[in-house]
Image (cartoon, rainbow, N blue to C red):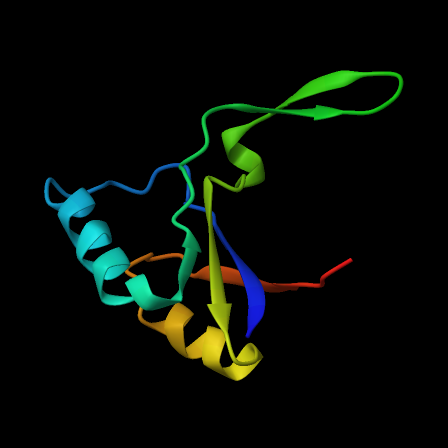
Length: 98
């Protein structure tokens, strides 16, 4: 099995429904066998370089959370991602073992 990172990013003005968390928890339950780390939502972030630190603002459409999953290959990871309740999609990356 390979490891994949799902990154979520939400539009800054996306309204969440009252049952949004229930929908997400139902999805996590449905893919439980593939989850390595369910992940966490992110709060405000900073972009840090050697010389400066700046806020990652909502207008930059920041990454707002992650999940680590295991799947046979990218096609299998994409199939799981397609079932995600995110309205703005999921970024899927293979995490290469080092």
